[in-house]
Amino acid sequence: MKKNTGLETNSLPQFFYESITDITPEDIFRMGGTAVGIDLDNTTVYDSTLRLFPGVKEWLKDIQSAGLPVVIVTNTYTVRAKLIAKKMGGLPYIANANKPDISGFRKAVEITNTDISGFVMIGDQLFTDVQGANNAGAISVCVKYKTREILALFHFLKIRRLEKIYLESKGKGDKV
Image 1 (cartoon, one colour):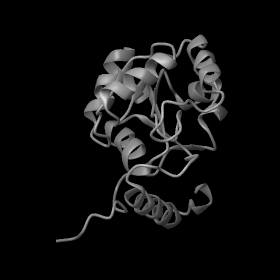
Image 2 (tube, one colour):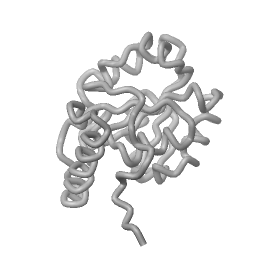
Image 3 (cartoon, helix red, strand yellow):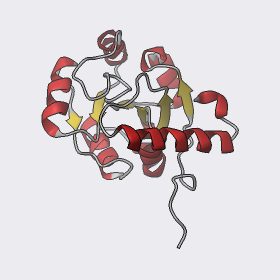
């Protein structure tokens, strides 16, 4: 039996950005986006905290002012997701999404009243956010992670190493 390293997956993002705040509403519309899903840790908040990255609140206002609904799709637990969602202006959220499982993306599409093909998922992890979005038929956007993960450090060091190997194997090594 072949060991699953994650390198055989559908984890190549359709779009890369340095930071979530670099993505404009116009970028999302050009992607074909009609709604936006956002990850939490290392995408919009510092890992394992409730502290938003600088500029995230303003970015959310710009995205929503353009008529794009936003929903949080996260693997974090419900209480933390709820607290962060409140800090983000009361965004709807899907906690314990178990990404890359596609059920959280299906729920997000229902919440935002859009079609999966117009749902733009923005996250920092290839094997959860991107793979899940791709498998669901959504538009996948990867942003560079900002800080080293605090919890399960060695697990995430391995994941980040596998992401680097995966991107290099796809000729995208400059993205890490």
